[in-house]
Length: 307
Image 1 (cartoon, rainbow, N blue to C red):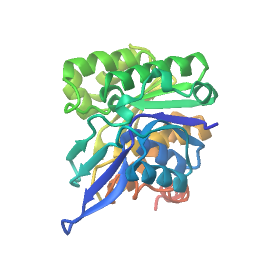
Image 2 (image 1 turned 90 degrees about the vertical axis):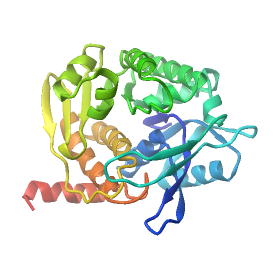
Image 3 (image 1 turned 60 degrees about the vertical axis):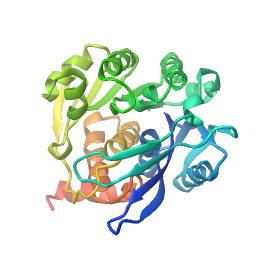
Image 4 (image 1 turned 90 degrees about the horizontal axis):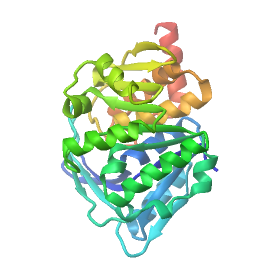
């Protein structure tokens, strides 16, 4: 059984290269987070559904290479795997989704692998998980409740996509989900759209009041603000050469949980996750540039030496 379980919709991913050609890869926000966690050395599995098509086969093979278990993933022969087309941009998200009627959108509460959830130490899902469809949303809430009942840490990344739902609905559902979360990850961009809040401490106050003991607010090149264990600290950004913002927040979330399980320190985990996010934006695609454990430790050592 995996220590970290991620729930959501994996996607076949086509990235437009600088020469205009499209390159096939694999993404989806919680899948990206799962791979980031696995690359830090964590035991990771996935919950959800894929089609029995070439894209679903490719995602399973990609996970196998990365050490992410697909043991709890359903394969639906009657529904396709969702697709995502990405036009890289260092500052913005430029995505086109082809996911209507996808296998993941049909995944429901009855499909959950409850023994795997009960055995996990962390359950991670996102606003996208809750926005894709009513059935996947119901599965997300059921998984959160099952994980909490088993004593697992529940993590929610707001990851707002207004192409999937209206801001009013998103705020209502995310506030309900935040009340079930132990760790809440969000961004200032999300919270400006959701709440009209543009200051990290105001965002922390708003979400902490709902229940999460740890709240993380990311702000791109300005770093992240973390509130945990009665204190708050700003984590500076790690050096980066941004070319594509795709997957940066996802990789931060996945890496944070891997390092949190290892160190038990949210602020140290945040510093290491910032290195992972910086590496992710410095290459093309959601997962190809995600740094591995040895790279993170080397960068951390350089930081400590003042190099």
